[in-house]
Image (cartoon, rainbow over all chains, first blue to last red; front, side):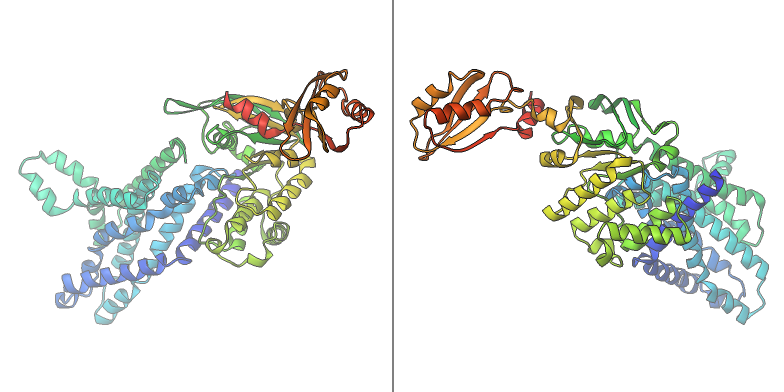
Length: 250
Length: 311
């Protein structure tokens, strides 16, 4: 009974949020810029064609960086706008739990990112046309990329609950995401190797989104990496719940 | 029944609401009055569970808002201050969303939304995006949301704010028509509204309840209540007072206005509950004064409100 009710509530919130993206220019601007950025990086920076390889490594390796910029922009409105408009007062006095509201909002944004990711399919068609890529590895990388996007998103949802200002939410989210990316970025870990003990470097780099993306990117879907992303999402949404529950006023 | 038990709220070290307790029964329309910043909205936000109280609680129909907020909120319809609604949604889409959360699906949802659009006079704007609506329409959309599920408990924070006089009248009629099987708590700073709509009024100042009475009872606290005001033509003030003061039951008489050819005099009774007008009238006509008008002061809420909230 209660589970059924929760599903109905999550679905209602989910529908409203997803509809919210598509009824404003946000959705279209996001999808277009997302695709342009990925295309630009893949073709001009990574020289996709000159590499002469029928795989999508050079495409997927840019995902963390594009997500780092774009996802906080997508997530920043989720709570901050409700707080600014005062509609949070209606949402939180409806007969739904805070958890249901958070899950509904998170899933709506995640599915939206999934839709954006889907529109990168011409890349897949291109490599299929050019050669004989490992389809399994590509599917695996897509799954991994989507999971990683969820982790980025959970950071953005959490920072959005901290403030009325979408700008502040965006900046804080980018900084946190930057940490999660850089912690596993080879140039950074190499620089640390000179002075930091190995165990510390390992520990820090293992908290990184990159560390857990590398093997997925190669086509190995390790349960540990999947668990890692889900635990980041769970932790961030849990923090989100604490923030909403303990906010002092509107 | 709504039971408010010792609700207290601190914002930092500032005490916004201080041990507010009261009970509202079915059929009552409680007016919540007070100057700006008195704690009206904060109290209502605690009743609906939007902000947690520092201490105390509210029990709505037997469900504690702190222990079982979902069950309590299912029974509540809430119109927050300033009527916040999603600006990027169409009216129908927004009400559909609210109906879904309130557990309506399929045909019953459609019917409920259509019915509420009709009742709240929203038919003309049903497909419009909310941000294109005027303040009055936004207010009505939010009001529609609060009564959509026909709740037993209605909490309305300034329900007629921003409406024109006709719309105010409509909303008041709706509130009155619904009141028989509901508990309604509404806040307002329009004193006429309390007289027009409420069966009971609580005045709150500085976070505490300073008066809890019927609107008539509050008006009876007015210093003017029960006084007889008479306007006469071409009269000598001194002779008039000399005629009025000896009447039995008269405490005092004073000239209110003698600037025009007519003179207005106010006669205060010794006992406010005994009729005085007939005695004043017969005394005046025996002495051949020409009465232009006479009425008994019903008392004035604004005067009582000021007296109670300003000290």
